Image (cartoon, rainbow, N blue to C red; front, side, top):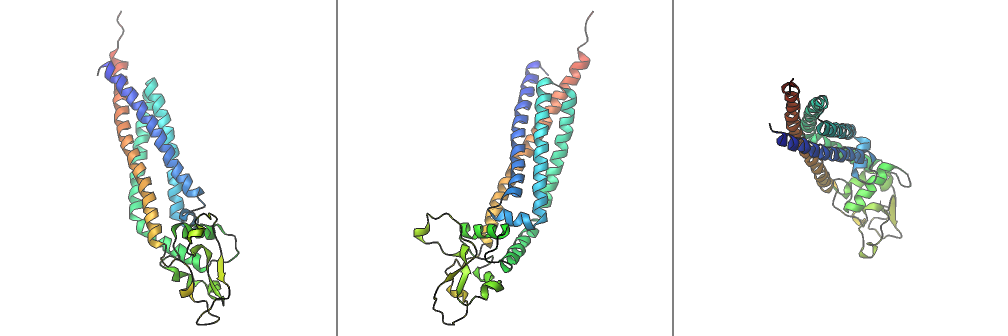
Length: 270
């Protein structure tokens, strides 16, 4: 292979590793986001679902390791260090195997994750307490207010909350309240239970859910669509990283073989 081709291979490998480093940082960022998010449905899932926590730690580990490999690959490519290029190839192969394994496991556990979501939200609604500071409750209030939905399957899920249904006035979850046009500018999130004062009901002393001024559509379809969209972005990034890994392995092996041949072919003449 000519020296010009080797130079092109070397700098292409450097650019691939630079991009590899950036994508590793993106994967690491996704993992940190899953663990640190406190204002969306991810907060509800990651607090109660062990599988999502494990997935987040896997993303962080793979992202950090990918960044390290990208850094080592850049050094090995620029300085033509054969040992670093060999290690780089082996570690890239290991990362690729881990990514494929994690993707297959995640794909076959999607149904389990959806079942976990339903169970987590149902239990959260049943145990919801008014005037109680709780990160899970606040996260679910945020979801209902932002997505404009109520309950999981429908707003009737809230009738399973004994504390709510024990009220004699018309009482409903505040975050489910239908937003009026004049309230569009109001960004603060409402929490807890709200009451309609002096409400006229056909059954005095009964908290009738049919009279609640709330969204009647449940959050299940909207939340699952939101989760599917975000997970699709994550999987798309992982596929992009896998393609770069394959190209990096090919280029590193090509450059490594060239360095090896130069070491034994360039014999000094006396």
